[in-house]
Image (cartoon, rainbow, N blue to C red; front, side, top):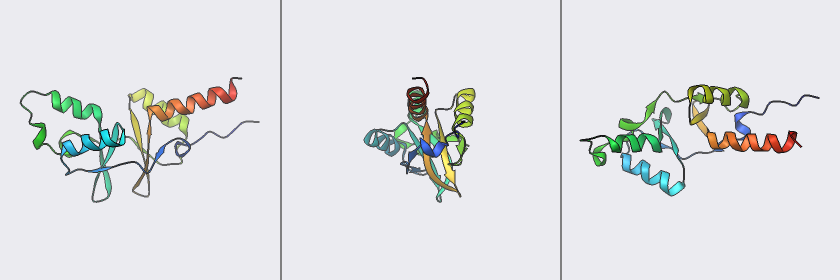
Length: 135
């Protein structure tokens, strides 16, 4: 009997830490370190407007003649992040992430950020699948 394909909600990190687009970039870096995360959905007026990764911060910090202390999150974030609903099939999301080399998908329901699905979450799902079906 075939089993239902899991959804992103089954593996996402629920209630993720977020940051405002107008916040200092150093505050985002501090939060990432404190909460041990690599991705922060960026909000403006409660709506998703971007995604900031630790790689985005490192890239901006490596640019010559850039004063990182004066930058805001909006200066370094990726606009138009890959966003999916919580009921999105896991296989489709993982395939899209692999094809486009996305490190994460922001899970949004009704305009509200509900979670983040990362490559780490995808690997956790893969490990569970292997343990369940390959024995």
